[in-house]
Amino acid sequence: MAEPSDGDERSEAELKIMGATYRALCEHGYANLTMQAIAEEYGKSTAAIHYYYDTKDDLLAAFLSYLLDKFIDRVHEVETTAPKERLDLLLDRLLTHREGSRDFMIAMLEMRAQAPYNEAVREQFQRNDEYTRYLLKTVIADGTDSGVFSAEDPEHASNSLMLIVDGARTRYGSIGDENALEEARRTAREYVESVLMAE
Image (cartoon, rainbow, N blue to C red):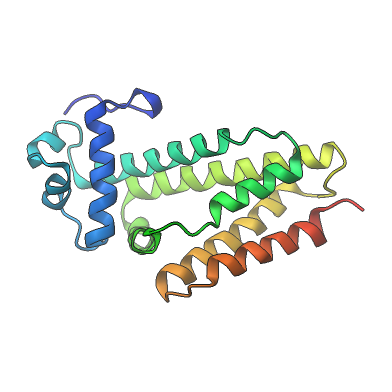
């Protein structure tokens, strides 16, 4: 197996494998995902994937890391430093419906359900979750320091917002509640306005 790459160091082949993994998850879901299905999306043999990833679990852990990197890239595209606007844009990225995203969200829910039994995948889910909460907490803490927010406990506030995000994604993916993301975005906005904003 080749040495795995991280972040911007991923090779062109690895990025294509990540894209193939995304498409295969959308089409087959997590339960029916195979290396062969990913290879078919990749357009090469399974041996070409095994050059980079020994097992499907290794590949999926790398895929979750790739998703985190993509999310971080989108966050870094936000140019404003104003805490309220930054928090709004961050929540928009967490709670925006994207075309074709429900199939992917279902696959991610399936993967999360298996995370307690899969150490590599569980650890990467934890890293992704911790980093997202860190981003929220940092924006809220900065806003509190500058007098925009009045959060006594930025960590509690970030955890509360993540519960809204996770609940909405679960409803959207598991029972097909088409309004879940929109309602959650409204709930998050109400939380920010009524709980976090300084008077």
